[in-house]
Length: 211
Image 1 (spheres, one colour):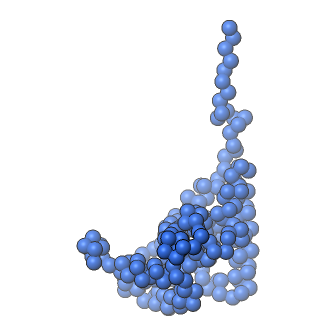
Image 2: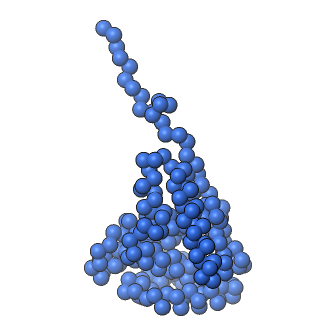
Image 3: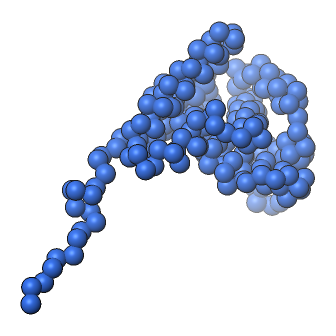
């Protein structure tokens, strides 16, 4: 009796073509933030993206569990994780470049175009899911607001850390970002600042002792 050979799902006929998409994302670790300023401790975009994702998830959990808002913390965290993904191509644009409305508009257009180009590198079946987390224009407004708040919060915590390291380079940035946080204060942000932010200034020994 003739035996039939079962089809191999990983044969060349069914394999997706090689994609550089995630290799691009892996290079976010090489892109330094705050490039125009002297840093006591350097920060890269991959590190920043993780911190924003954690903070956005925290704000979303607070919003849902403390203030009974309808929000999916996992969806918010995923969008936050990819919020600077286009910088794998563009690099980190210094904040002064984004000051004027014209430059902000040009930057948004550039990021949108790069986002579309990056998504096009993916196999077609994956493109809708990655578009949903990368394309800021498609984000629900309340989720976009949480990610923006987390982004600012991460930047403020970075400035606070630099000041504790004795680096006055970040003094003005700390004041400007804190002013932005105050201007856009939300219940979940207030809760985080009151409950969690003070511990960021503690030493390891103090953290371990629960002070």
